[in-house]
Figure 1 (cartoon, rainbow, N blue to C red):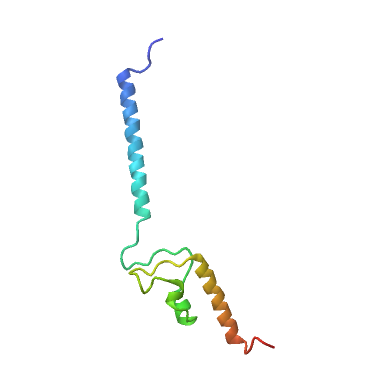
Figure 2 (figure 1 turned 45 degrees about the vertical axis):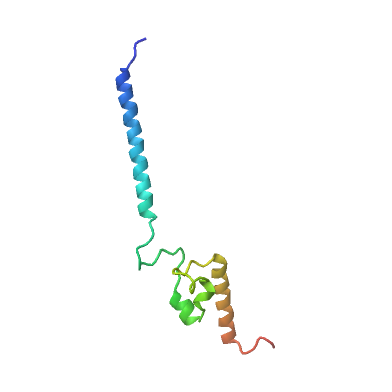
Length: 106
């Protein structure tokens, strides 16, 4: 049975497929890096939950060092652990309850 394609045509087809895969991979890497690049200096990073420093520090009186352990020792304050986030909400509830009630002992 005779060959349908000439061997040189098959080689060109394989090289084109390799080039297309290479370009698609390079484009994917470029897009990933563009979408996941760090924010520019001065820009606030994206936060997965709505958060207000004004509310937590200003209204509730929680000190920066409570959540950001390295605020005084490093150039970057750091991102608090999720356990701190839960604890700070619990602390805020306790403070709010203590403001409304006069005594915990009946």
